[in-house]
Image (cartoon, rainbow, N blue to C red; front, side, top):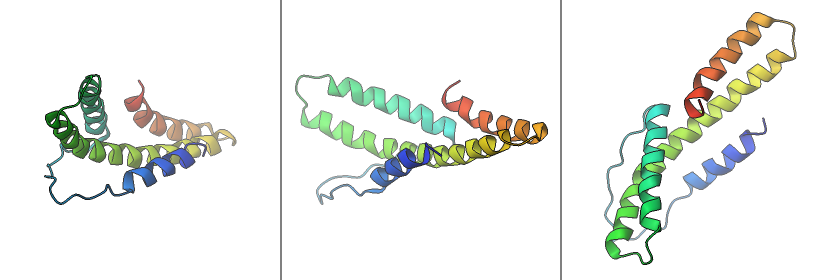
Length: 122
């Protein structure tokens, strides 16, 4: 349950529309249809942005590159939030099952939770 508040906050931030500017081009993001794709895109595109941000001065091309990166990052982050919310629910089932006396039920919920959790942090 402690994860739900931070995840809700991140979801709110991700849902906040960016300021629109008529002269800005829009790019097609890389898909993040699975958790694995979202994690890979999030990692790869954040690394690219980090490299750009280390420069002493950002050129207009750098700024355009970052703008393009954000499309894929936004899609990846939305998938991570979706999966994180689902993961928090699975963990709550584990928590509730651990308070009971049904080991088979706890194992079922625990393994289901771990299947996704270990994709995020092995």
